[in-house]
Amino acid sequence: MPHTNEEHIKLVNSLVETTIDSADGYAEAAKDASAVRYKTLFQQRAQERRSIASELQDEVRRLGGEPKDDGTILAAAHRTFVNLKDAVTKGDEAVIDEVESGEDFIKAKFEKALKDTDVDTRTRAVIERAWTSVKSGHDQMSSIKHMLKH
Image (tube, rainbow, N blue to C red; front, side, top):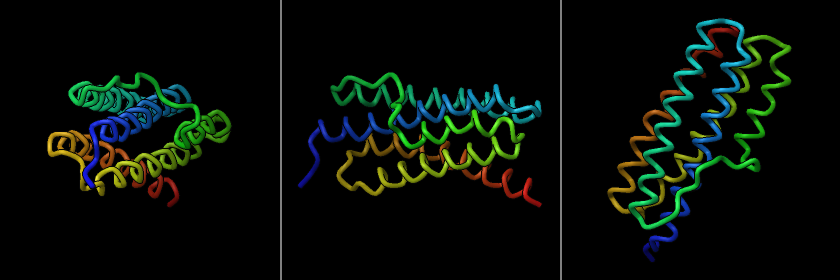
């Protein structure tokens, strides 16, 4: 049975929350990283995630819903990013580990949303555009993490 608009709104709003959590996590990581190249990278990713969240919010409005405008403290991504505070004392490698862990979470959430076959084509297109950025952030953090381990 196809989804109602309400279910689409709920799905997209949950991606909004996770994306905002992710942006906040990157902003925290930017404050916590000691290497300038990581600070800059994290700031860029935070901005990128905020613009993705904004596109997703526009889609919620198009569907007739009220978009979420903040993350959720209950999100696992947020919990992961809160661990950054502990990671800071352990240096940039620990910060990268935490960020990558948050990236695993958001990537899985977007992959699950993309498997939802009932989403209308416009909504799917918005989710796919966001997913492209999420995947690139995830892959980048993953490769930095592996580079640091060697």
